[in-house]
Length: 106
Image 1: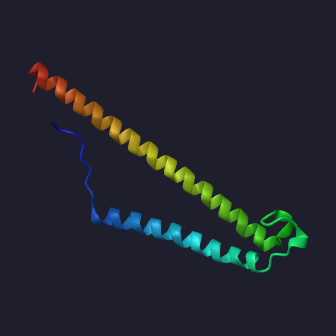
Image 2: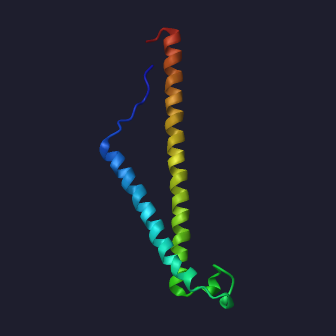
Image 3: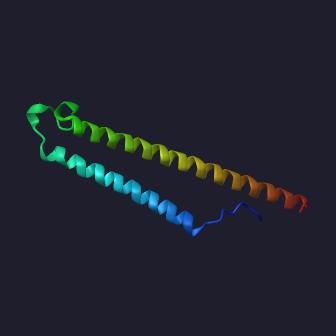
């Protein structure tokens, strides 16, 4: 049974681990910047985490946080799509090889 077997290189593993670490670092930085909002929140300015209770810098950080979450969701969906395509191709190749071997076309 012959299928597609991608080469797993050490460089690729390091690349993906670095990308995950960078993603985690961005979340940590944005979370630390949003902690300033929590420390200085004043209920008289509006509901908690409403835009009316934030100053311009806090709105910018909150917007960046939301955009980063959307980018992460898009990235996970893209990786899921690529994984689906990879698995589908492997299943089709295995079915083709199985039918060839059953027909004696090896």
